[in-house]
Structure formats: C-alpha cells, structure tokens
Image 1 (tube, rainbow, N blue to C red):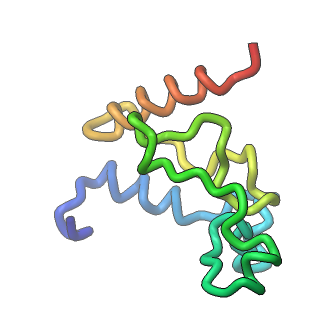
Image 2: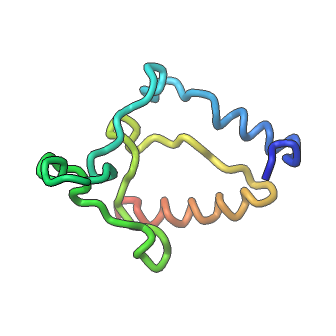
Length: 106
C-alpha cells in the first residue's frame, strides 16, 4: 500500500511511529542485531554464537514464540508502537493486548 492511499489518521500514526522515543537508545543510531538473529554461515560464526537459541515464530501455530524477543537488548521491554482503535489497527491493538496479557507475569 502506498502512502498516497493512507488516511489522515494513518499518516499521523506513521509520523508518530517514526519519532524516536526519548531514552530509547536510538538517538545514537543503529543498534547491533542480536547474535541469535545473525546468520551463522561459517563454523567460526556459529562458535561465536551466531544463530544460537533462535526460535522461529514461523514454526509456531500462532506465529508467536511467547517470551521471545528479537530486539537489541537496549530496547527489550520498550513499546515502540501503539496501534490506535481505528480501522485495521483495531485488530492489531486487540492481538497485541492478548499477547501482552499472556506474557505478563502472574
């Protein structure tokens, strides 16, 4: 979908997403990709921990691996996007609420 077909509300959401959250660690630029997400194309990289412990969400029936995180350590636990309750984002908001409730400590 091109941005030209986005409603004014959606485009406001896009602008909000692109803002760098204060204290997010992103002010200094790109953060390193976690080693478990890096491709271990050689034995040396595998020995260095590349790809170790990776759990693919594609192999899960719901497309989610509960408790798994794919963000750099500096961003773990931060909320970088909060969908609105309008349009397609409402379904995303509801799914995120269920996932967050399921992973919350009890």
